[in-house]
Length: 361
Ligand code: SF4
Image (cartoon, rainbow, N blue to C red; front, side, top):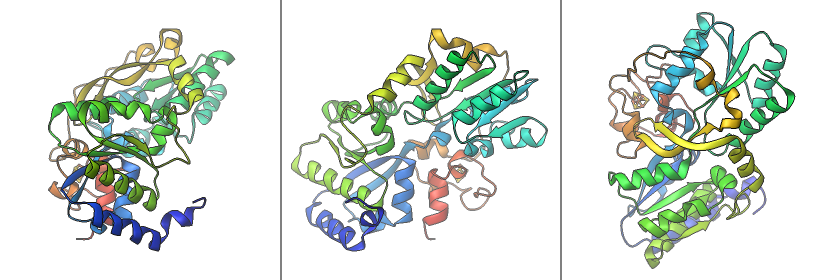
């Protein structure tokens, strides 16, 4: 398969689904970690096509959604600092914090600019030497290398007004935390293809080895997901959980060594707070000592104030895989993509937004 159409071929999809139906004998619970996979599953009705024996749960793999309220509040507090320009990916602007959102403080006059890469943020820093430019660094292992590269570039060029608020999250540690919690019983995991393109498939080995969870790294087209489900069913029916790569066109077991080197040059693992999950050791990234001059958290004296979670929002439970958006009383009523109450309705990869767009009533 080389081209996109082949990954959406209806006949191939039917053949895979038939094989899954034939081979799946016992009830299993599979979690798709990534919000991108959730979108594919919802958009193409994959849940409905699978046999009743295969139950699919959505996981915490949407970086906007898992960014905790207190971290959002930090970004909002920073945006109110004098002579500060905030740069951020667009999705973050609409996510409500405790008392406001970046979008609202921008409407009140804060200088907040949407960028499409850290190169844009660096360029803004070069052109505004009298201001401090802060990049809101959210994302998983996928985005961290480019943000690391921007910090290295700033250091090399002697740009002294560029800062990163590092809210990055690392994926394998949070899966370990979910499995350790015992709250969600899983048999298999669809591992994120883009994250694994950077870290490789090996960091998932612990899940198969220590927890008996079948793992398949999958791409994001419908046939990618179906193929991963078929591979997971086979592993579980044969009683041999292991880590396999279905997304061979993007992922190698060792990952992208250059990207890993960039990441580990600038960042080191640190505890991170995940919405709905809490603090998870070694699941975040902070700037190393040599790069602390670029760390917004250390270089600014700001007070985000007390945290206030949105009343009635169950994003946290959804991100842990214990509830679905259909369990939320605000879904499609008080909470819609136009008026989101929680982050899972804001992000295009959020479960609530996916259910809103693709789940028929
Ligand atoms: Fe939160 Fe809205 Fe989702 Fe409910 S529907 S969990 S309020 S984002």
